[in-house]
Length: 211
Image (tube, rainbow, N blue to C red; front, side, top):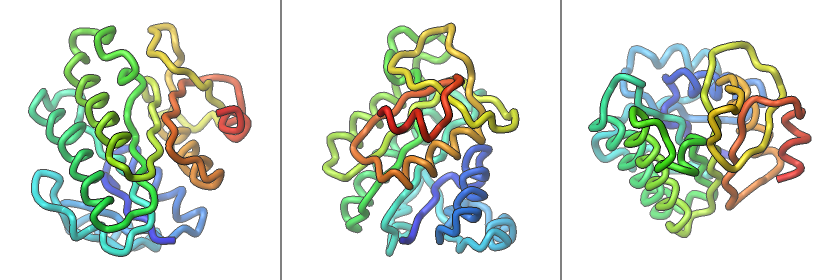
């Protein structure tokens, strides 16, 4: 199996790369800055240079699984949210279909369940996430959409709670746990599902068995 990791240089993407390495899953990291090649090569990954704002379809060649882990930063504004959280995800679905990709995995956000209920500062972000998720589901490509809640950089807890709403009282989840959920979902061969989760007390593998 060959895996393309989009957004490999991001905070969550880098953790996913480490988990792919630990699981001995061959992967290709899509990066924009060639100076970052060495860090992924140290993890045994190949690299491809591409930009989400341009045509990056060449990165999909030979990839059975594509993981979209890119996301706009909190302070980048509506234009970057539109580009990274919606348009590039939609292009990824199109490219996946063109290249015969078997599975497209998208890291979305819990807020995508109820964009209209999001705080005003996150309304546009959550709308972009929801629109891209809906596009992926309708694309005809086999998909797995992960919707984690608020993220932290704490060490992994190894536990989550499966949820299907964006209630304000939900506990945050660590970025490392997001990476662990992704790898466990791949191992369980979960497809054509949207999985929302937050911090919780259920072991990740047990939680996914209930999905």
